[in-house]
Amino acid sequence: MSEKVVKVGLLGFGVVGQGAWKHLTQGEAGLEKLLGVRIELAKASVRDLKKTRDLSIPSEKLTTDSWEIVDDPEIDLVCELMGGINPARELTLAAIAKGKHVVTANKALICEHGAEIFQAAETSKVHYGFEASVAGGIPIIKAIRESLVANDFKLIYGILNGTSNYILTRMEKEGAPFDEVLAAATELGYVEADEALDLDGFDAAHKAVILAYLAHGIWAPEGGFPIEGIRRISTEDLQAAGKLNCKVKLIAVIRRDFETNGVALGVYPALVPMSEVIARTDGVYNGISVTGDVLGTTVLTGRGAGQDPTASSVISDVVDAVKVIRGDKPPPKLLHTHEGVCRLASPSEVEGSFYLRLTVEDKPGQLARVADTLADQGVSIATVLQSGIPERSAASIILTTHATNEHSISMAIDALESLSGVLDKPVLLRMFDPNNHSK
Ligand code: NAP
Ligand code: HSE
Image (cartoon, rainbow, N blue to C red; front, side, top):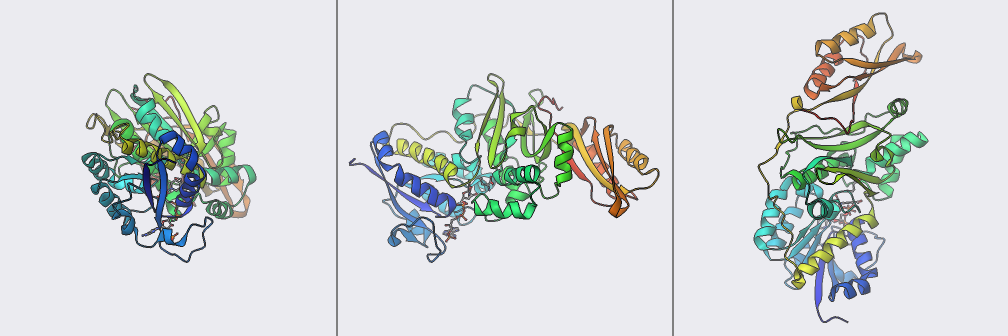
């Protein structure tokens, strides 16, 4: 048995916390052999000591006081697996200030306070590991920061939210109702404590902001780019996408124009051509396609949510932190070396084609009025598909457009919403084109 011991405290003992504890315990001997250090799980904090948990640990190892862990001078490494902004932020900054290394899965916290935390970790010369914060078990953080360091990134896009991909996949393949699939995803431990984060695109946006910082050195503010979720997607949209040889996926897109250094960022459900690996990435799997100027394109896929894959990423960071503690290597740099080179692109700079589904009164001239409204905003129609909804004396019109910019389409949608004969709020989806060279 090694004489050297690294004591680890967990803030949070839920889905991810229990997964990390379980696999650190099961892998203890192997990790000790690898590192020459014994990792001792000292304590975990929770809100409710009475809650039934899948993993049973000695009761004296659980506490409701997270500060007991952060203030314990014997604990070298803190895993923040509680989620949310506060008290996670205060606890993280306090642990860093005390010289403790920190590992986290908390993308919401990094998205909102990453600049402050990265600076604090660099100042205190501690390891701040966040591999589990993006795409569950896929090692995308390490890939971008280390393995692909030779590249400037033209396009990073893909599925960053397991819950929404699981829901869309089961709706498409089984025709399963949205609420039933959401309940199953919750049972499987995929869904955030606040399910709106998954369903309304914010969780994927938090992850996209982290990737955009790693790739381009910009912290994109919430409200500075489009974020849309999956609540309005119907089985009709999923089927129509199939007819266009596409799949509907909730994707995050980070595209850099090398001439202007504008970075277009967006999170939205989009029609992705079936030729793309991302279109064929189903269930809880995430997929990230990375195009670098040196590498070309590579795609990473794997389980993007759930206890075990996320624990795999947490443990990878724990191992890196132990190597720093052992003095084998310095903590990796967190602040981007080229901050200030790129900027967030505005909606008028971002072009693409769109899919539009309208429910309209079935009366003469309606389609012409829709076409005129689009033309008024400079939006040109590429294809039209119309079918009847007899029970409502209505028709469903599915249009695709030629390339237009985000600003024009958003003006067109506003105009369509108030057009006489348009019955429901239009459903607008982007048509993802990997070869789009947006200005
Ligand atoms: P979870 O199951 O809800 O667990 C959260 C844990 O933190 C619970 O043990 C909870 O205590 C504890 N906790 C919350 N607030 C606390 C407070 N103020 N003081 C003390 N303990 C507190 O959540 P999770 O799914 O494990 O997610 C944890 C983090 O990992 C989040 O940042 C999430 O976004 C991220 N993440 C999750 C997944 C996933 O698949 N689940 C994947 C990647 C990243 P009680 O148990 O007593 O309520
Ligand atoms: N709720 C998140 C998801 C967990 O479904 O992707 C993984 O970050």
